[in-house]
Image 1 (tube, rainbow, N blue to C red):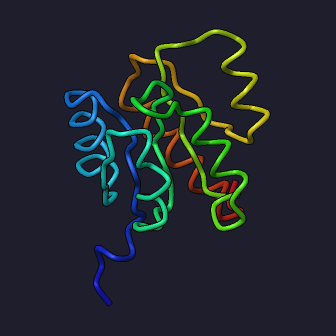
Image 2: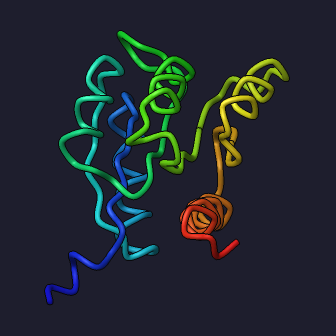
Length: 133
């Protein structure tokens, strides 16, 4: 079996190219994950359907569709209702945290964030989705 196929696939939904690059390299180099990216919030659901990722790193402020609406769509779709999501945002208002919690997103990381904190959140979200947490 191809060892790379056994590594979790993570979809990064982030519109800022430099942030996307940092997140992708952190996940591949330090976490050993496979990654794909989507910068357009309007295309995230399509990419989830195409790629079938094990986890989504979701920026809440995306062009054409915000992360809260995308998360709402994921939770409404039986195929993706349990898909783990790590939300990232510079918006740290309590109302944002409350919306994420209501939608079952347990991992929210305010920007800017450290590599260790980020990788721990990703690992925890993946473990929780597999009943290991």
